[in-house]
Amino acid sequence: MFSKDTVITGKQKRQEMLLFLLSFGVSNILNVLAIIFYKTPFREIYTQMFVVVILALVLYLLTIAVRLVIYFTKLIIKKK
Image (cartoon, rainbow, N blue to C red; front, side, top):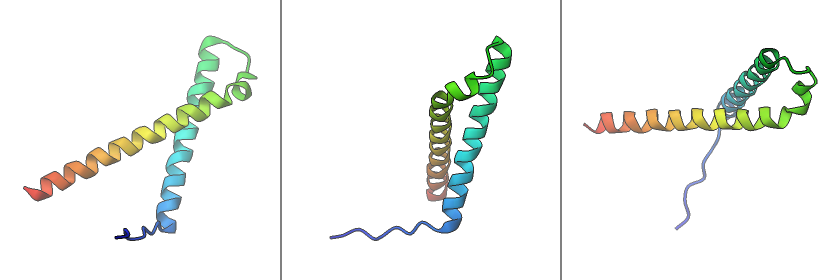
């Protein structure tokens, strides 16, 4: 009747946190490159932080989608 409890290990939590931090870092680098390219004031680093966070979330969700595609592809290949 009840589903099994899922255990998330410390290793998995660290891996996901590092992946999100990597996404956040890439977003920040893209923000700085845009500031340099468009010659806008460097205060945009702080004023556009919400955009950086949203972009980081989008990048993180894209990595999850890619990992799911890889996972299901491996499942299909194993069944054959």
